[in-house]
Image (cartoon, rainbow, N blue to C red; front, side, top):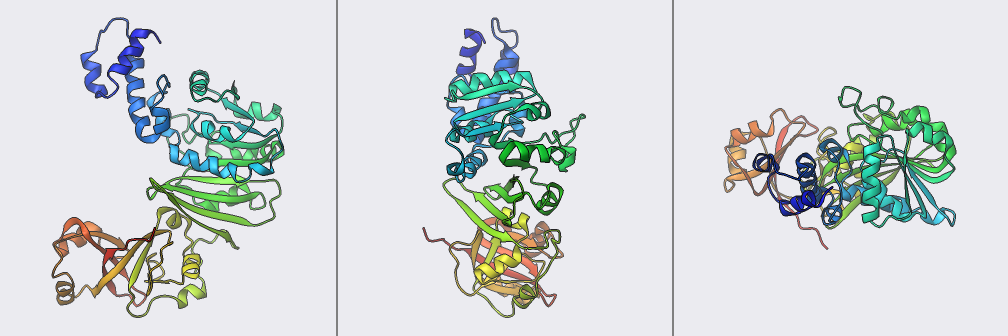
Length: 412
């Protein structure tokens, strides 16, 4: 990159890329396609990778790689994940990322190891990684351009191997099944476990975690982490160890701007029955009025651990398929949103009119309910927004009900 191009990137860092492409067309001594890509990449990084976005000189790859790379909050979570077990490693710890990509996950995880190898099959990404790692202070990082499978066969033993298999086929279409991704971890599993003490695999949030555990093998999967950011499920992390016999730990995490919530429990059998409904949960379905309503975060919803939620927090479900929970007392550490119920009504017109007499706008959500949120809003003749929340659901007796709520303030 010549000085004119570098100056152009710095000067127009905050400009609209499409408008800039027209205005700067034909500019001399400037690699315009490269400059526009860097400006767009830096603008994306300010939101997705803020610690990278403030470093002058970081090179960003084409849009697709920026779209697929991890965000900084999820990368930092992986760093914390390996930090929890780093004390168990030998004095000279080692880490290998077999699917380096842009190197976001690598750049955070590598900081916890004495030796770190970044492996990537695309040579242009390797070049970008070498450049960026030096700016990020990763002087112990080694960049290797190779196919993951080839490098794995010949590599020395490592404490941790990380993989983020490509979730697009040769036509560019998205894939989700583990066996359809590249590389295929199901085929490489025996060799991965022979080459490392711990293997961490990042998978699509679209995958059912029970299916992922079944595909990879229950005897070697020790942990599953369902990771959300601001209540949006972002990724599924599977941790494998050789002949794991201590049971499966499932962690649901929702990362907020200033904090994150964790809900962790050990999974009993059977794993492959997501529709399982225990007798205890049946007995806990709500009868009568309650003061507080709880909505699980996206990771808990993805995990489907509703029986465990009932037991842990002594809650009752509105009904088995509602995934909304009720209690007569506040719970400050619930993994999700908490609301205080102002009133409850059926869909009877007179009851609804009385319950909503002072409400002209509300946030509406439906769970196991015959109307969509927009259709219900039209029927109730309410505007969107405000500080009132209406949850529409069907109770265990088949009655369609509205729960009119206010958000609770959790104790610090």
